[in-house]
Each structure stands twice: as structure tokens, then as C-alpha cells.
Length: 190
Image (tube, rainbow, N blue to C red; front, side, top):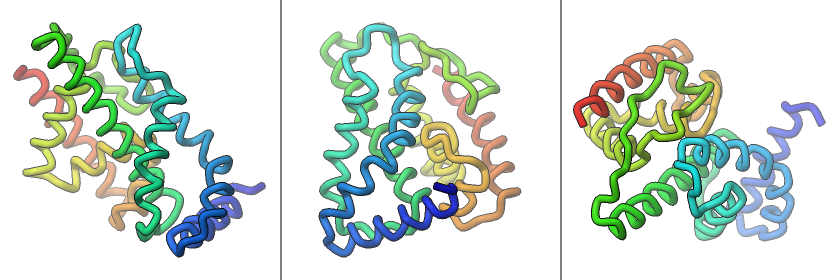
């Protein structure tokens, strides 16, 4: 199926699901499963070896959280994936915080964010430190924080990010550059 047609089908199914059609979710899951696993793999790549959550478990946990969001007003596929990405981030941060609390601070390793954010994530990147830096950024630069969330965690392209945020692609590219520098500086302080 051509991607444009699939996006239209996904948008129609998202609207049907928002309208209360539970069968629409059953049709959506196979259409979005590959993309959700891609997002989850990006997150899991940043986790230390031996992490107790696996990619499929993260996707399933996100699905469970999103079932409650049935009445959400989904704009399109990109909007849905952005929310899924944010949900996965929260799940992993909560998991990391619980793990660190159990270890009483637990010796998490903070690694600087590399220039090639979209291509790869350092396995030792501290998810909690990144989350805290993103939260701090969101207070001062909310749009830049959203761009990071959508591009880095969600794996959305510049074009998709621009569509979700309803801004120009040039604005996304500029926010992306500035946000990476800001986060690298913030995480470097720690």
C-alpha cells in the first residue's frame, strides 16, 4: 500500500477510534506496530545492558496507556506517534527512577549527548538525566523540547515534526540545532 494511502487510512481509523469504534483500534495495531517497535528500539538502544524491559514490553505498555486515551482527538499518524513516543519516554523514565531509588542513587552513568542524535544513541546515556534536562528545557523553551521529543525519541522526520507542531521545516531545523546544544550543555553540568 502506498505510504500516502496508508497515512490516510491510519488517520481515518484514528478518527473512528476517537469516535468510539473499538474495531478501529484492532485495525490500527497491525498498521502502526512496526513504527511503534522502531520507536521502542530507539529508546531501548539507550538503555544499559540487562535492562528489565524489552522492546515488545515497552510497546505493549504504551498500548495499555493509550487505550485510556481513546477519546483523544488524533490529528493524524504523526500526532499519534508523537504521543506514543512521549508515553514510552515516561514509562522508561518511571522505570529508571524506580530502579535508581531501589539502588539508592544507583551509580547511573551520565554520558554526553553526541552530535549524531537521530542516527544513534549512546548505550550509557542516563535516561533520568536526559528527562530532567528536557523538563528544564520545556520550562524555558517548550517548542524546542517538543522538537527533541518528536525527532530524537519519536524518530519523526523534520517534515513530520513540522506538521505535528504546525511550524515550518526551517523552524524545526533551527530548534533542533539549538536544543541539542542546550541539552549537551545542561547534561554536561551534571
